[in-house]
Amino acid sequence: MQAEERQQRIEEHLQKVEFASLDELAELVDVSVSTIRRDLDALEQTGSVRRTHGGARLAAPRSEEWVFSARDTHQVEEKEAIGAAAAGLIAPGQTVILDAGTTVYHIAKHLTDKKPQIITNSLPVANLLAGENAVEVVVTGGVVYHRLGVLMGPPAVEAFAKIHADVAVMSSSGITLEGVTNSHGLLIEIQREMLRAAQKVLLCMDHTKLGRKSMSPLCGLDEIDVLVTDSRAPAEIVEAFRARGLDVLLAPPSSSSANGK
Amino acid sequence: MQAEERQQRIEEHLQKVEFASLDELAELVDVSVSTIRRDLDALEQTGSVRRTHGGARLAAPRSEEWVFSARDTHQVEEKEAIGAAAAGLIAPGQTVILDAGTTVYHIAKHLTDKKPQIITNSLPVANLLAGENAVEVVVTGGVVYHRLGVLMGPPAVEAFAKIHADVAVMSSSGITLEGVTNSHGLLIEIQREMLRAAQKVLLCMDHTKLGRKSMSPLCGLDEIDVLVTDSRAPAEIVEAFRARGLDVLLAPPSSSSANGK
DNA sequence: CATTTTCTTGCAAAATCTTCCAAAATCTTC
DNA sequence: GAAGATTTTGGAAGATTTTGCAAGAAAATG
Image (cartoon, rainbow over all chains, first blue to last red; front, side, top):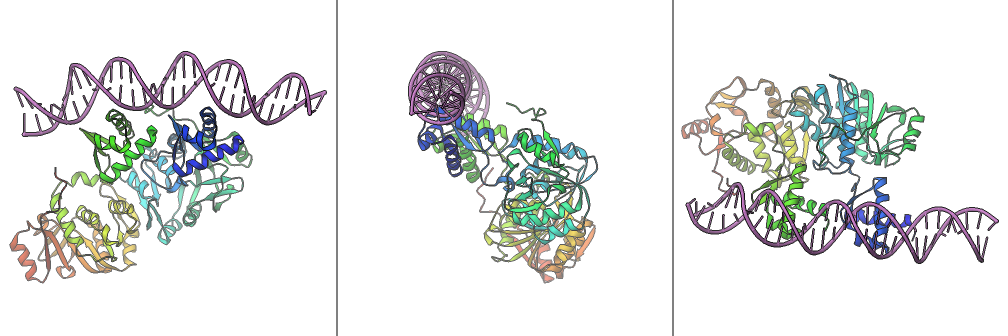
C-alpha cells in the first residue's frame, strides 16, 4: 500500500471514530507503529489531524466552522492569533458587522478596547459582548438555528439590508482562486447583505480552509478587502491570492498568550 | 484510551449529570482515581469544569453567567415555583411570547417539554432555549441593554407588532387595583405590543411586587388574564384582585426541589 | 476533638516518544 | 535489465511522559 493511500485511510478512520490509538491504526493499515507515527506527523502538518500521546484525534470533526461550542478545541491557537490580528485592523469607535462562526467569535473577544458599535446575528457573540458596557451591541432578529446560535430568516436579512457599517468581519468554510464558498446555504443570503452593507470586508479563516471549496458560492475575491489567516497557511496559496490582488494578513503565532502551560 | 479521549468523555458525562464523584469518573473511563484527578486539573485549566471536594461539576451549568443572575438572589425559590406553575398553563405546541426579566427566565426553564414556539426579546432566554432542539426560538432585533440582556428599540417593537401569539408570559415591577406598572420606561412600548399580540396574557411576579406601584403605567387589570404569584402573597390583596375579576394562581412552594443547598 | 474522607506530593513502573541504524523497497541511470 | 543511489520501513536504545500507588497533610463530618 502506498503512503498516500495509507494516510487517506487513517484520515477516513478518524472521521468515524474521532480518536484512535497507534496500535489501532497500525493494525488497520497493516504497518508498524513507527510508520504510523511518521504518517501522523505528515497529516498533522496539513492540519487535518492532531497528535496526542498514544494516538491521534481529528483536528476538525464535521464542517465545524458553524457548529458553535464554547469549548471548541479546534485550531484554537490559530483562531486566537487571527482574532488578535484582525482586531488590529479595526479603528476605535467604528461600526462593525460580526458574522456568526467560531473564528469570528474569537475576534469579538479582542474588540472590547475599541469601543465599537457591533451589529451581529450571532447569539454567542451578542452574549459575549452584552456584558461590556463600552460596547454597543445591536442584534438582528430572526429564528435561532439550533446548535449554531445564529439568527436566520427574513428579519436577519432585512436588518442588514437597512444598515451601513464601516467594517464587516466574516468567515466562511472555504476559499479558492475562484472565490469564497460556504457550506451553510441558508446563511449565504445574510452574508451577501453583510458584504453589501460594509465598506470594508475582512474575511477570517484558519489555514485549513484555504484552497477548500464547499457547497455554495458566496462571492468573488474582489469583494474581499483583507483575508486574515494564521501563519501556517501554505506559502504558495498565499502567494497566489496576493497575485490576484487580495491583501493577505498572516497572524503571527500568539506571542501575547500567557496561558502557555 | 488516550488522555484526550478520556477528558472528552469526562466532559460529556458531566454535561449529562452536572456533578460526578472521582470514583464514578474513574469507573467510567477505567483508570485510577489519581489519573482522574490529573484529568480534572487539566480540564479546569481550560475552564470547562470546576473541581469540588471529592468530585467535579460543570463550570457553567447552562448559561447562567448572565449579569442578572448576580442580582437574582432574591425570591429565587418563589420564582422557581412560579415558573413551574405558569408552565402548567401553557399547552404543548403553543406560540408563546416571553418577556425579559428574571421571573420569566425561570419560567422558560420549564417550557422545554411543551415544544413551544417562543418569541422573545431577552438574550438570556434565547440563550437558554437555543440549545434545545425541540423548541423553536424567534428573537426580535434591537439594541442590547447592558446588564439585563434585553433587546430594545424600534426593531423589537416592530417585531411584536407584526405577529400574533397564543400566550404572552410577562412580568413587571408592580401591580395594584389601579393597574400594572413597570419601572423601566423604555420597555413599556415593547410590552404594550406584547399585550396586543397575544390572545392570553400571564403576568408573573413574586409576592413582593403585589400592591406596589412604580413609575410608568403599563395597562389595566382587564388586559391581564391570569396573575401568577407565589403562595406567600397576602391573602387580602389576592382577594381584592379576585373580586375585580382577575384570575389569580398561587404557585405552591416547590415540593419538587431536589437540588438542596 | 476524633474519625473518616479527600488532597497533595514524591516515586517507581509502565507506556510512549525520539533518534538512530540497518534492511527492504523503489527509483535512476546506464 | 542490472548496479548504484535514494527513499521508505521496521526495530532497538535511551529519553520523556504518563500512570498508579502510598504516606503524610488538609479538610469535612458528626
